[in-house]
Length: 392
Ligand SMILES: Cc1cc2nc3c(=O)[nH]c(=O)nc-3n(C[C@H](O)[C@H](O)[C@H](O)COP(=O)(O)OP(=O)(O)OC[C@H]3O[C@@H](n4cnc5c(N)ncnc54)[C@H](O)[C@@H]3O)c2cc1C
Image (cartoon, rainbow, N blue to C red):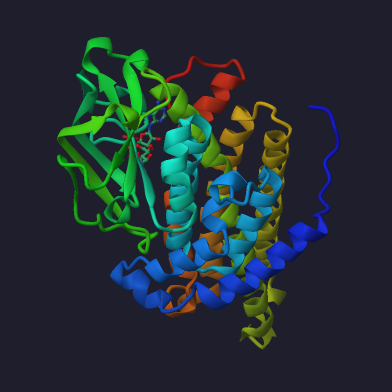
C-alpha cells in the first residue's frame, strides 16, 4: 500500500459535519426512550434526513444524491452517529443506503436508476435487502428461495427473515436461485415492489436492540415480477450480493464511531463528577483505565475505517480491510458499551441514562452484515490461510 494518508478535512467537509451535528442533535432524538421501549420507527425523522440529503449520500447528483466520496461519507456518518442517539433510525438508514440504494447505483439499468433512485433519495421510497432465510444465514448461498422464468416474468417462491426495514419498505432487493442451475451461478437479484401480489411481510420481529428499526419476514408465494425487476444480469446474484455486503460492512459502523465518542465523553464527565470515598471515581485507576481503553478502541476503530475509506476512494481492493474493520469496530462497540455501563454503576443499568440502550444496539453489530466469525474466515481466506466457506 503506497501513498500518504491525510487526516485533514476540507473546509467543505468540516462545515457539512458541523451543520449535520447540530441538525442531528436538534431534530433526531425526540421521545427516544419511549420509542425504543415501544419499537417505533421515526418516520418524520426519516424525512428530515432525506431533506438534508442523507438518503442520497452515495448517489450521483443526476439522481438527486450528494455523490459524496468515501472519506466524506465516513466522517459525515460518524458525525451523524454522534449527534443522533437513535441507533435504530441510523441502522434503517444504513440498510436503505448500502443494501438497497447502492446496488441500484452500481448494477441498475438506466430505467431502474431513473425509477428508484430519485425517490429513494427524497425519502419517498424505503428500501430493504432480503437475503437471509430461516435455514441460510452465514451460508448465504445455501438459499432456498426459488425463481423460475415464465415468459417475460419471473416467479419467486420462498421465505426471507431478519429483513431490516421490511415492515416499512416500498421495495425489496430479493435474492433467489434458479432451480435448474443450483449453486452460485443460479443466484439472481430482483427489485420487488412491496405491493406485488404474492409478497407479504410479517409483523415486526421484536428484538433486543435497534428497536426503532423495524425488521420482518418476507414471504413470496408465486410472486410474479416483470423481467425489468432483474438487477444485473441473470446469474449475477453472487456478484451483486458480495459487492453489496462489502460496501455495507465498510460503512455501517461509521455511525458507531459517533456513538462511541458520545459515550466516551459521557463516561469522562461522569468519572470527573461522581464522587465515592471522597474522590471523583475517575481518580481510581480501575475506572480511569477503563476510560482510556474506550478511547484507545475508538481511535483504533476510526483509523481502520478511515484507511478503508482511503482505499475505496483510490479504487483499490479493500476486502480484507473491510472484514478486519467490521470485526474490530463491532467488538470495540460492544466492549465500550459494557464499559460505559460499568462506569455509571447502577445508573448505567437504567433506561434513563441511555447507555444500556447503546449496548443493546451495539450487540447486533457482531451479527449483521456477516458475523465476526465469518469476517475472520473471510480475512483468513484473503490472507491465503483457508478456503472460502461462505458468501457473507
Ligand atoms: C439486526 C440485524 C439486522 C439484519 N438485517 C438483515 C437484512 O436486512 N437482510 C438480511 O438478509 N439479513 C439480515 N440480517 C441477518 C444476518 O445477516 C444474519 O443473522 C447473519 O448473517 C448470521 O446468520 P444466522 O443468524 O442465520 O446465524 P448462523 O449463520 O446460523 O450462525 C450461528 C453462529 O454460528 C457461527 N458460524 C456459522 N458458520 C460458521 C463458520 N463457517 N465458521 C465459524 N462460525 C460460524 C456464526 O458466526 C454464529 O455465531 C440481520 C441480522 C440482524 C441481527
